[in-house]
View 1: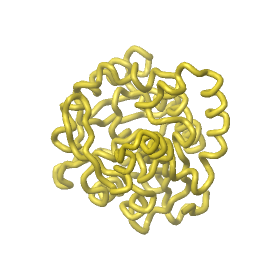
View 2 (view 1 turned 90 degrees about the vertical axis):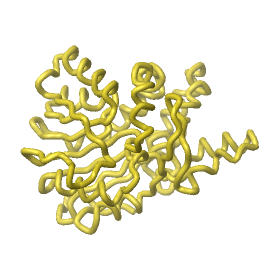
View 3 (view 1 turned 135 degrees about the vertical axis):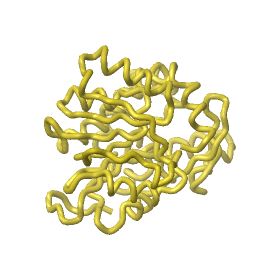
View 4 (view 1 turned 180 degrees about the horizontal axis):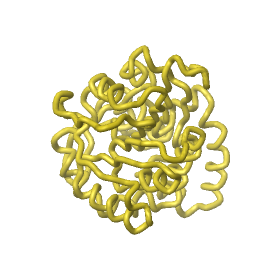
Length: 274
């Protein structure tokens, strides 16, 4: 995480769930990620949750029988994640760790085991300066045959582009350049927008793309949730259609977030999807 991002996410930690995870749209989008991960889960698997935030994903994984290392660079986020794990009877299956995804490879954690799955959900990767360097780390952290599931903000979001175009605002073009300035918690810092190809190259030739799905093709980005929050019929209609259009190319690439699932190239369980 870039230096300014740490205090930024500390500042918003207390209100993160109420502004995203706890909203109807935010909960639905997170559950759509979980739904696609279910086929890869098995009881007792070790999972590394990179950029865990307030621990929603770590808690869900723990309640589904996994042992989770929830890692984040924000102490405030980690404190909330720890509280959730203990309050939800998942204590002992979730451990938290302060981890900077932009840290030097030499200073990275030396795990006593490798992980069966690595998950990074809802944009932690967009705070990474060098995706290839993180990709090399992940290959040392993942167990043979392990699954890597990454959810990130892509290079084009249809909702965002149309919204800003209607307001004659060039902000809607920010993703196309691959980098923009974000202002979160009163701090401004650079974030990067990745493509599926960027992610695939970061993991190298030993991993292949097994599945791609859009997370928020028809549902708006979180800062526009207000457009559907008070329109339950509209939300229900968009959510219903999202379930099938989000798996289709090229619609899967124009969502607010993109889910990419990568598997070892020698694993025959699913085909490569570009």
